[in-house]
Image 1: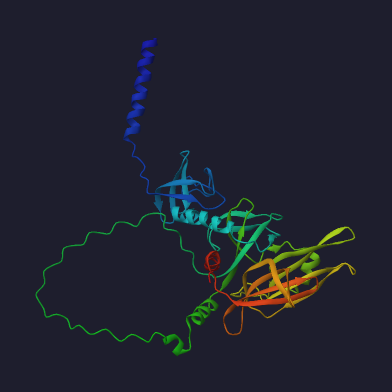
Image 2: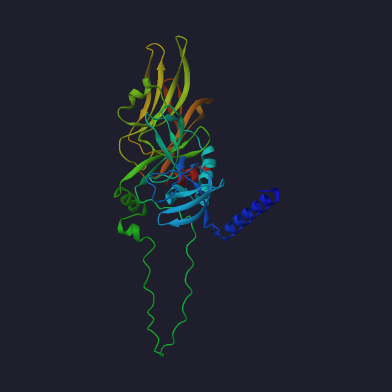
Length: 381
C-alpha cells in the first residue's frame, strides 16, 4: 500500500471514530459529592459480586452521573466511573460542616490523650451508620475534647441530588357556586406555663424521651493531622499511667490532667487530676473527680482530695488561682470545673492546691458564653 493510500485510510478511521463519539450520548452531571469513608472501591457494575473498580479516598470530589435506588454512578476527576452507595458519599454541605468541625476542634481544650486496643472508626457524625473517614489503630494517640449522649435513631442519608421538579398544577375546574363554609374562631391558646402546671418541664420531657431509646456515649476527638470526628467513647483508653489508672474502681476515666511534678530517686513523677463516671449512659460528663499526689517517702500515689456523687460537665481547666491568706494574697496552682447542684443550677467551682492541701476558693453561677456556648451546643446540650 502506497504512502498516500495509508494516509487516506488513517484519515477515514479518525473521521469514523469522531463520528461515533459524536453519536454517543453525553453524561449529564446530576450533582457533586465527596467520598466519605477513608477508602472505598468503585463497583463497575451493580451485578458485580464485589467492588472491582478504582479506589477512592476520603474527601475526593466526584460527579454524580446516574442513580439506581440506593446507588449512584459517579465519575472521578481522572475519568474513572463506577457505582457507590449513597450513604458512602458526603454532600458539599456535609463536607463544609466537617471542615468547620475541625476548625472548632482546633480551639477546644484537650481533656486528655487516648488510644485503643482494637481499631476504632472515626465518624463524620455521632452515629454508627455515618461515614467513617479514619480508623484509629492500636497505639495511635488522639485528644479527647468533649462527650455527647446520642440516642440510636435511623441514619438519614444526605440529600445528594436536588428534589425532582414539582408537576405543574392543573387548572381548576369550574364548579357550581355554593354558600361559603362556616368559619369557626380559633381555639384559645394554652397558658404559657402549661408545662410547669402539668408537672412536666421541657427538660424532663427531653430526658424521658432520651431514656426511652437506646443510646451511645460519643466522644469528639482530635487526630494527629488536625482533623476531628466522633468515636464511641467506651473503647477509648485514656493514656494516664497504669499506676494511677488502677484506682479507677471500675469507673470510666473521662479526663485527666498533669497537676505538677515531683522528683523521686531521679525519676520525674506527675501529680494528677482526673474525672470519672460510673458505668451507664449519663447526660453529664463525670460524677466524681480526684487529685493524686506522689508520695516521695512511700514511693506511691495517694489520694489528696476526692469528691463523689456529682453531675459534672466539661470543660475542666487548670489555671493559677488567687488565694487570700489573712491579709496576704498568693497565687496557687488550681483548677475549675462545672457542677450541677441540688437546685438544678450549674456553678463553676474553683479550687486551689499545694501538695496535699486542696481548698475550694469560689463558686459562681455558670452559663456557657462565647466559644464555650458553641462547645456546649456541640455536646448536644
